[in-house]
Length: 439
Image (tube, rainbow, N blue to C red; front, side, top):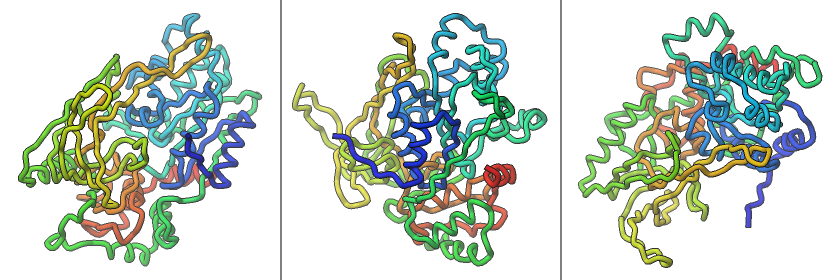
């Protein structure tokens, strides 16, 4: 029996817009407003909706496909490929049937990639309106982490575009289906589910929009801890700025545990390319702090839940009597759960019987756990934690980074700061403020 979801009034209004109009939409909202839950619901409204994401992990999470894979675009050469790709009858037949495309994590999609999609769809569909007349629906929060520009390409990029953000794409200068200037309707989810304290949500919003007052900053910096007396609380996760720091913290803590290590090796079926939600080998010990990277079918944990391994044992499959290794993991609520390898279905959109259908192309099986004394702020986006310690190192260096870090935690009192947050750590791109203020 499927779970019934109760949506807020603003979410219900968005669902109505999707079902009853053909408007292109940008669906946004602060951290913790239920964007992912709404996207999952919307994607099931119509089997003809195509759901895409900029990265492999994001695509797996939305049960969709990467943008590059679906449109057959080579990373780094998207616009050239879109302009010069040979269009054949099979492509024309395929894309003629597409009516709606949803793109998740749009804040991380660059303007040139969106233009490549626009150019390609116009060519394939022989339709000079924006995106070849296909309805586009974008999900994401522009105040969170931005698109990535490599150092060697940023100068040339910013000659061609006002900003790297999706809204700077030239596609938005096109006409729409009715030969009117293309207008993307912005719909904002207002209800925050992650944090319940109104003072904390107000503080987070001030960080988000770079309107924080000295008094609010003072309140925030009461969470700074003395590094000499600090000890890692159980189930606390460190949010750090780089992969190297996260890896070092995790390996150092694993080495401190005087216990035998054990490893889980992944298996896969089909040609899943690099669509792997976990490492091929996961090395753990009893006593290790871990994070779940899947949603449990029995709803005992969700993607991002923190736990501690308290045992390892063998389980017997009642059907075929095969034995397999399982872990006993203590959750934050004190419950002990058996955790066994999880199988992720990897899917792609295949063109069959005149329409695109989402079909499994392979599977990836691995224990759904990662070491979790530390994680990068970037990888924490979309997750909710009960206890965090934030270490910005030499300071924040990216738009939205401090906001993403702070907004992962449910309460202010369970945030620890390794060093005071400075006004200079709160980086918000003026282009984002201007766009969101006028749409």
